Length: 178
Image 1: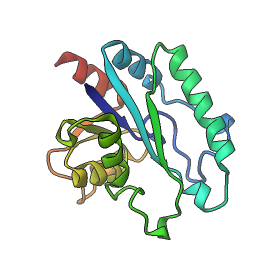
Image 2: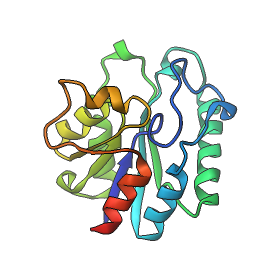
Image 3: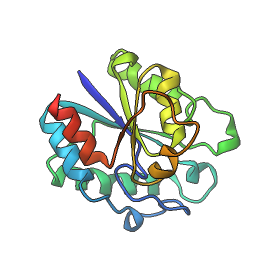
Image 4: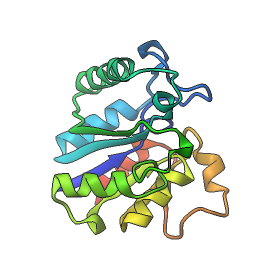
């Protein structure tokens, strides 16, 4: 199985400093939906792994998150793609949970549930915490320059051997070329 883990905000859709609080605020990054469509058609399993502390902070509830994700699913399907699962951490940053990135809990859970070796997993993120999560689990980090990606690329904390691409469409092109 070819499994690709994607962060949501800053990779698939535009990020906001005040959180994505409604389906109207969920705006796809140009080319991201088409990239998921191409990867799906090429046999990739696509899983989203996203921190959603807006729930733990009381900004939105699970029902609203489900509405946001329903919009994302429809948009991906309309682009010919499929998201096989969405994993999210609802906890606030100070909760001390194992699922909030940069902790590896969410990534390890994905690998276990999909029965793949973590060494074969790749994760596309725009933030250092995304990359730290997959590295801590034992997988391959991929950074995109969308969202917080340019700032992350310049960070001293960028994990060694991180692949860097302009956006999810460029990641797709590279994966399909191999």
